[in-house]
Length: 149
Image 1 (cartoon, rainbow, N blue to C red):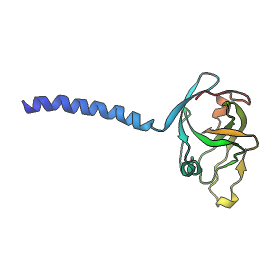
Image 2: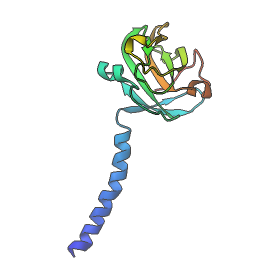
Image 3: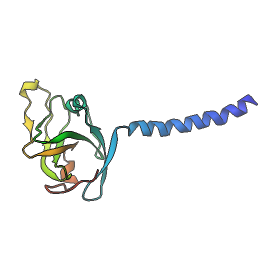
Image 4: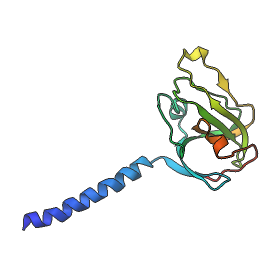
């Protein structure tokens, strides 16, 4: 009798594991809806340490994924690619979530930090979105487009 009761409990536990993995995978993320209706899942960075680390040391970024940096106030925020291993599209958005600047295919920089150039930050922004290199063009993103998140 004990075995018969244990089997349903194990099946429930196993079924729950898959769902929890999905939930944990999405912790700290949100959906961003692009002007064409495409949805991407982004990691949200608000803590200064997380914002400094960003995409460092990562070997890939799926086409439907990204990283969203939320700054405390609007300002000019240049970004760099120190220890980032893949090209990224860097997109600056104002407080109305409209694109004010795009730097496509920022190249990786595995050199000394002092040798890595900065990109963008020429327009006041509150948010910065990083996508895999080439995705801004693939999604047709352009200055003035509004994103929903």
